[in-house]
Image (cartoon, rainbow, N blue to C red):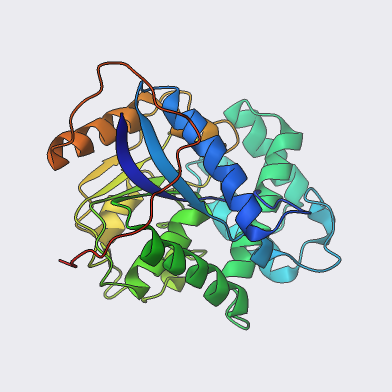
Length: 304
């Protein structure tokens, strides 16, 4: 039984070279549906808004090239290091430590692979810095517009946004307040990341507070306590008004920020079931419809 009509907004590391944006969107949509279906006998109609191709730098170095990061990326990365809940003695001298040494310290304390930590943070902060570049907003504008176009065309009632995608989705939803969304779910979100993300959002936070986009009826934020960029813990509910649920208790969801673990976690499944109950959708008896279900053509909706 078809449950929810969902727009997905992907996070970092999703560039699909050799594919057009529409092809990449279809591939990611299929992946998201499969992971969502792993916790439910019901199938959701999912369309992922693809924007990763807009965040590319011609001639960029390898993702793990920490020794040749642009100055703005390195600055953002060092600011992030200061935001981690690390012992005081570890923080001493962060500003002068070589990045690999600082990240090796983080990896050791978290029980993670240093190579994978390096790969993850280099990828994450490169893409975030491109999106939030104060000197060139072309990528930001184009990515946001892709999501806005998808929202306007799809007539979906749920938006699920992961990682950097939660930033893109937040700004896109503010850009189209006439679009009515019943539920926004942010996963592993860096929206509240101090200095690096939060103060750079648009619209600019007022008196150090953001707010739920006006067309969104309900906002649920979910994060694994081990997610390195979903910091500070419970920062989304502290920094943004009208966040209905902010949970940092998803056990073992974090695997270098992979969306698959978030999409297949029990807490997201229960959130979507609760949404279906709120909206009066009947529950499935256990049968599963075809997994390649696409969003049907949009019908006009009345904004709240």
